[in-house]
Length: 470
Image (cartoon, rainbow, N blue to C red):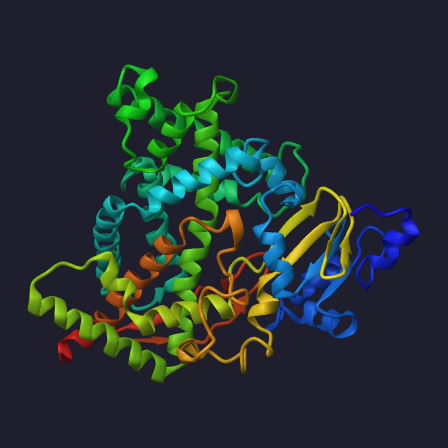
């Protein structure tokens, strides 16, 4: 829809406040993230202006939506009206060929290829065994520690699993070097966008170059081992990890679209680690915290998982993907953890043209912040939203696939690894509760720049688990 003049545009833009010159309302936005209720920034303006309002954040005019229907339209848009928008530090680090920034047919093809790979029956069988082995090895080491820092342990665990899925890299010296460089790279995601030597962005860009060299080396070795006939790649690469999938996708492209394939693959392997490396370990950590604070929920989780353990012991069969995913209460615990402390609290998009949704005008060039956390913590959507209540997911009308629950995003950019993430968390919780009792020390959640535990959630574990009582 086109508008005749600026006055017409202003009259249709949602109500709100632009705050201070240049700074806007950024300081209050950030300050709210350091409180126990980070959605307070949204709630205050929602009470003044309604579910959709305008503000000015991080140097940009922004339309904030806490409306599930509007968020659905924004997230399901096919890239022709709303395109990804990120802080400058992220765009500098990821570059033009980033999977996070690409749109249209190329993004659709790459996203679909990764999604098919993560959902393939062959991967599900293999990755279930791999995660089980990694979790058991990690838990075994806890017996020798007086205090276990859950956040550190889950980060270590999920990093190794993720690197194996993406590039088949196992534990060892190369893994440790990769981890060191990745930690330096990720520090630059939220920082001042200055690339001078000595700045964090400069250090992170150099770390990315070193990571890309390591991945290119793996790709070259993969190509050499699989085939000497690059014209027949699609017939010889079956997709044992994400590198194979991206190699096959490169081979299927047109000649005009095959620029710098090794750099494209290396860059996107690094970027695929960002959501998987940070979000999954934090859901694990927060689930342990919420369960520690709710003995009734913990008891029901233990009972459900002990029942599965008994069934497997009697049948002599190994665990399958479906065994873990069929643990109903465990899945409810995961959903409730995602609802209460969603790692991705909002999704940013930018309008490529004037667009009107439900009577609100979003002008061309403005950003839209689709607030997921505001919807998850809205009393209209969830009764007593600040209470950890996994039983709420048993109630009629509450489903983990509605407009009011979107921890993995939505539309074409829905996280392709959502089932994989749930599996990983389910396996961790299962083996944790059948192996150990624990007592958690008091700790607090920090919400900025990402969700973390202030003290990394220290717990003391006993060497004898619930399985000794079965």
